[in-house]
Length: 335
Image (cartoon, rainbow, N blue to C red; front, side, top):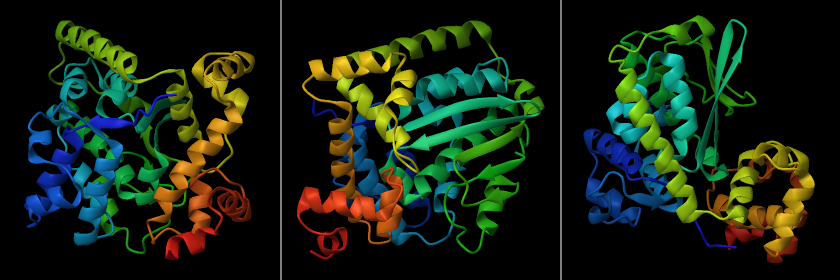
């Protein structure tokens, strides 16, 4: 198994830093707190580990006030800020094609995020999922939704008002900021993070549509995505990625994971054995690794962490954690 860590483009921390600067904060201080060197961000298409992005988010959230910081940051995004993927969206035929391109190539922007276009009659749901460490911070997920909606408005040159925004987080008490950004009802404590659109909105034309250029950019994005996977990921990494996307809210299932990877459960088990591991061992290892990181966030209750790691009951997480570390989660947190 490799030591490969999920990565994202430098474009994401650059967007965060720009927002922080415009809010009157010191860019250099944030870079220092996140242990990111300025040279690392000189090329927006440099790839940074997700751990660096998490440190930057935490630093910003300590110094920024408001219940919708993530949504505010996402609302400053432009298609060009998303690089190759954004340009592929910009020259699409209509909003549906743009969203499908975003869904297919989102891992170029960030390997820690997943996006799905789920059509269903008169309503279409744009479903988001993120690495548990990002979900725990909440604001990165809200930034993703706001960024996609803002880019959609930009490339269609329309208001693009959703039917609703769904957030899997408790109501912060004052949702005025959320409503200002999303311009629609915002529902909290939902099963998934999602933008709900009228299906008819997917036919909105893209004003700069260019089928030839858009097709070329899609080919380039496809090639980039393949090279990214080939360079960085083996089969065990692929399974780990599938597992973390299934963790929050429910125990991952061998058959569901296998189906999502396009293989049978038997094939999945065999290939993991060939790599010296098993499905259950990989799941436990991932939970053990994530638990330590999540417990460093004192704002998260132990029950919240149990949920993010896919345990049905906090007590099951507490027993597992004692087995891994020899102490309870609360004792670990207090040192």
